[in-house]
Image (cartoon, each protein chain N blue to C red):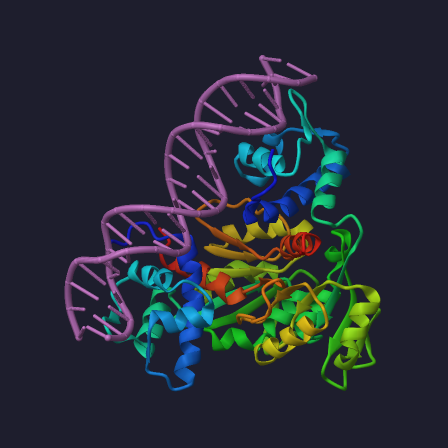
Length: 209
Length: 209
DNA sequence: GTCTGTGAACGCATTCACAGCA
DNA sequence: TGCTGTGAATGCGTTCACAGAC
């Protein structure tokens, strides 16, 4: 299939499929149909087939997909075959939680550097990671070839830090601050917006039947 | 306008609008046009007008929207006019970060109870909130009339806890564990899936031009 | 003239339905 | 027969464009 326009929703679901496949892999399953995956993830089976077809033909008609092979293919598609190196900006409560999150490593993500502007934190370690002065951000990013940042600073500081990351050559930012980041638009920004999700839930609770 | 089918994306954006309006309110702004909002949020102005029109006619032609009025309307739509009471399940690193997150209160969310299964944590306090034994979950939820839960437990425990919350009468769950929750489908579940977001960012970094 | 509210047009994503391969 | 891969049909959300209120 032609690969030109891949829906952004498809990209997101690839992570879902990967996690699910790895689960089946751990349980010793060798082969799996789109229906099997669909049942676990509670989605439509043809959606899964179409999603995968954007990237190639990974299945066998009548048989389904080889779990190990497909897992590898998706890891490669998402560029998670090597570990994804991440820099953490802001080691407050949230940042500390993220740095200690055991699931990150398992899923191929790796926080390899951490920065904070609080002098009392600089020089200390969290989960083995040295907390550094922001002065050294750029050189550390260059040295370790880091492309992705997690931004876990207070809202007021997010924009400044975003620009800082831009100048340091970061290409993607996961922003936990509830604000729109203005950075040059080849930098991809993803938002984790808890207030938005809670607002949505609140709305649904109100209109609960 | 007829209110029958409100797009789920619209509901999500209402939180965004609310936050933005409150910002303008703080800065003393009294009136605002859909264009002004659109510029700040970097979206299409008619999208904002259409979103709002699902819930009523809040603007004045030629003038725009009254900031205070619209903020109030949206709070009421999302049912955030009183505080939204939330129970936190799992007071590990992430749960602790959430319980201490100062922005929650400002935005009308309030964690009013916390539970953990670890006996060493039970009886202690975090940010003034007593960590309780899960045995008391149901009665606490009834007593405080809590409808929304944040689930911040290890993946292995998420499903069991989800069912527990279901039996306790919870109506909406914000789930941080990277797994699909099976609960009766009138319970609304929102997912915060960091691996998914990071996977997406990793994909875009790979295909960076 | 300004800016809202909204049908109509458009475009993107999902689902259907089936041809084709094992 | 079983299951994939994919055009075609559908559904949903966004954007356009403009009538109508101020």
